[in-house]
Image (spheres, helix red, strand yellow):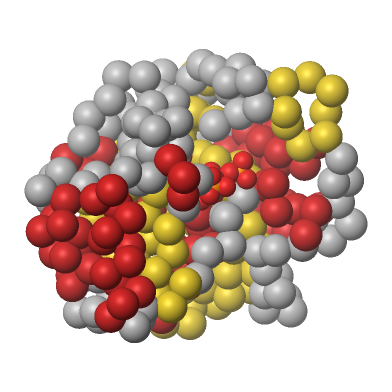
Length: 279
Ligand code: AFP
């Protein structure tokens, strides 16, 4: 696993170099889900594909930017699903964005997740790597990722980060979010899931949610490369997750690699409150 993670670090480092002087324009074509792609989305995808293809441990790659899984080495054991540039619509405003990686053994299923990694390209380059515990690393001047600390969620947080178009929320979500604000929670939402969840993890608590909405009844965020890896990290750090009905996002199963799900990530208090409000 360490060898595989070192390839991910190389790809992250390369993307972080390219981000210093990026082309922030859009391609004329669209991807398979009909999204107009940034040139930088495609560049990040190419960097990750090229770097990870050299890792002998990787059987296949699943990219948010590609319709099909890419087979690399049938004999190898791990499948890496990745979002090359999460929050790319924030590139023009120079907010923090990131890359997310889920490492599955044998086949892509939440129960086969062995590790998850994400990077944050902000004022600093940070990496969270999680096998059994979630560890924060920072890039130093020698281009090395230096371990800073283990990350742990507290029992309860203070921030509330919720996505989706509010006019399309249903009443139970409106009431639940209002109840958190009435209790004193403060709004924190950038529009890059990786940065918003990173904030909750670093502050030790709070809630990130992207609910089912009238226009997106199955949510917006993608299970295999966004939701599962971040749920794995939050739960290993002592937090909780749910889709609004169950006790963990990691219980969910999907056949389509581009499936989406409503999702909630937080500390114990907020997820218990969610389950009482929702069920
Ligand atoms: P992009 O990568 O296309 O910018 O999408 C980002 C994202 O998938 C996730 O990072 C955000 O939490 C979510 O979309 C924001 O969506 P809303 O703009 O609907 O809140």
